[in-house]
Amino acid sequence: MNAGPLPREQRVEAIRAAIEAALAPTALEIEDESHRHAGHAGALDGRGHFRVAVVSAAFAGLNPIARHRAVYAAVGELMTTDIHALAISAKTPQEV
Image (tube, rainbow, N blue to C red; front, top):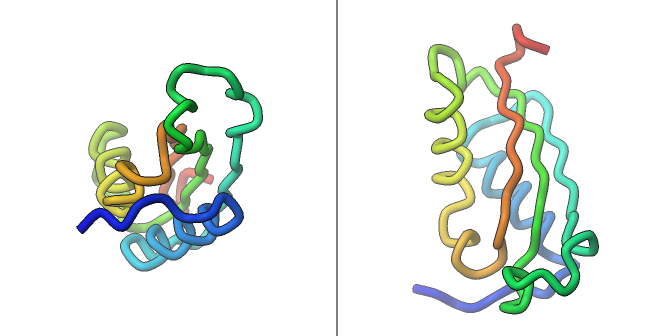
């Protein structure tokens, strides 16, 4: 069920909660880069641009595309309501 977008100030925490629940990261950084895309056609619908750096053992044995898919699956419906663009760095603890 699409409940609509969250208030901007709640988006980073919603992304954090979703990734933590799905991937149990040992490190997680989330940056809201929406201000850098003001006026961009993709920003007109109100969704934001974010950058995430995730370190998780869940990525072991996965290629980069599978890691990105895991992050997209973790944020789930937020991709349709709150996130327009998501830049992802996904590493295992051994890779950092």
